[in-house]
Amino acid sequence: MPAKMPQYSEIEAIDTPNDAMTESGYVSGGSSEDYTPEIVFTKPHLQFLNRQLQFLEPQDILRWCITSLPHLFQTTAFGMTGLVTLDMLSKLDVPRPQMVDLVFLDTLYHFEETLNLVDRVRKRYPLNNVHVYKPAGAENAAEFESRYGARLWEADDQLYDWVAKVEPAQRAYRELNVHAVLTGRRRSQGGKRGDLDVIEVDEAGLIKINPMANWSFDQVKQYVQENNVPYNELLDRGYKSVGDWHSTQPVADNEDERSGRWKGQQKTECGIHNPRSKYAQYLMEMERKRQEEALTSALHSQLTAAQ
Image 1 (tube, helix red, strand yellow):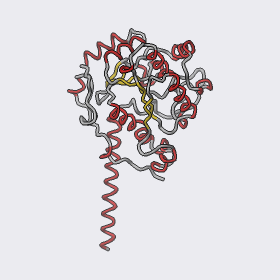
Image 2 (cartoon, helix red, strand yellow):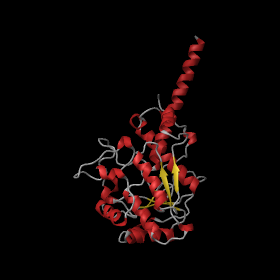
Image 3 (tube, rainbow, N blue to C red):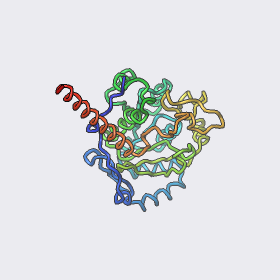
Image 4 (cartoon, rainbow, N blue to C red):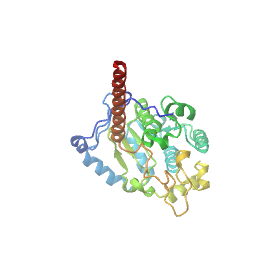
């Protein structure tokens, strides 16, 4: 069954960045009705903050975030780095109004071990709410495939990233009024993350903080062991980075941490950390093709009727 393409009119429009907005430290992306940045860093201020924060320990970065950034959430797929961040936050003696809640994107293709871990995390950290977001119009994989076809991640990986991850993330940010998010990305993970800043600002003004940017996999693992942090059982079976079951494999001891993700593909990110404009352009192109096909079909019908 062919995938049902989203109508461009149904998605949040994203404009191409312009130089003026880039100079202010961020680039505008989403509709102003849907998202208005509450905090705007100028480019020099952002560079200054990154110079200062890069020398701090993750706990100090998190403490700065809690006291400086309103509407702060943590986006997580419950990888080890994200769990270490959560554990550190739980020990900062933060009053509930400032507690950092979690946003979990359930693609409907997570390992069973990952979903079990979510339940364990809820029990271990009951003060941190877990907000679960799924692809629009689908509660399970069967409903997803009835709408988009089987194995969409192979048929059209960009469409899969959009409907399973990017759109749910943007919906979460809009509905929860998210203005800043903590991520689990680290420089030691390689790929596009090798020159990661502690603070980034995306095209729509969303602030992304990478508090563990300086840590290695071994440091993260050591913290987990010393603090008895719950983690994904798959990590004991040769996995180091866990995503969807269809695009995650165990890795050898000498392989990079994320080498088991999208093995054999020219891909290193799942979509939510790619530029939003990339998906806007993709979806506009899909809509253009749809309109062309509809016009061609209408003309063909008219010619057939005339004959």
